[in-house]
Image 1 (cartoon, one colour):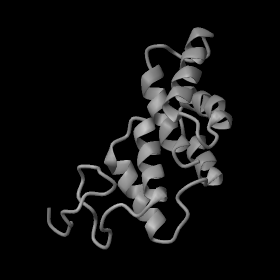
Image 2 (cartoon, rainbow, N blue to C red; image 1 turned 45 degrees about the horizontal axis):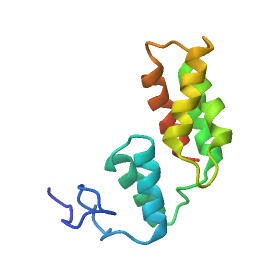
Image 3 (spheres, one colour; image 1 turned 135 degrees about the vertical axis):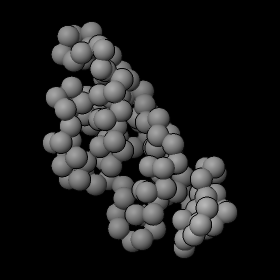
Image 4 (cartoon, rainbow, N blue to C red; image 1 turned 90 degrees about the horizontal axis):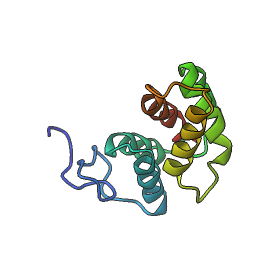
Length: 129
C-alpha cells in the first residue's frame, strides 16, 4: 500500500489516496451511496470522491454522462436512455436501472443474455449524472 493512507474513505474498506483523509460530509456519503446503488465498490467512489475534493464537479454532470453514453453498445444505450430521466434526487438508482432493464428485456428491445452486462455498462455513465 505504498503511497496510500490507512484511513478508509466513507466507511469503505479501501485506503484513502494521498491528501484525502476520511469522509468529508454529505457529498462523500452521496457518492458512496450512488456508487453502491449501481453495484460498484469503492473504486468508482474513490475516483468520484477524488474528483469532488479536487475542486471539479463530480455530481450532476449530465453532459459528461451523455458523452459517456454515446460510447456504449446499443443495448446499454437503450438502458441509459430509459433510466436517465428517472434518476432524480432521492431515486434508488439500482431499482430504476433494474426496472428499466427488465422492461426492455420483456419488450424484446434488448437481449436477455447480455442484459446484466449492458446494465452495468449503462450504470458507469449514469453514475455521472
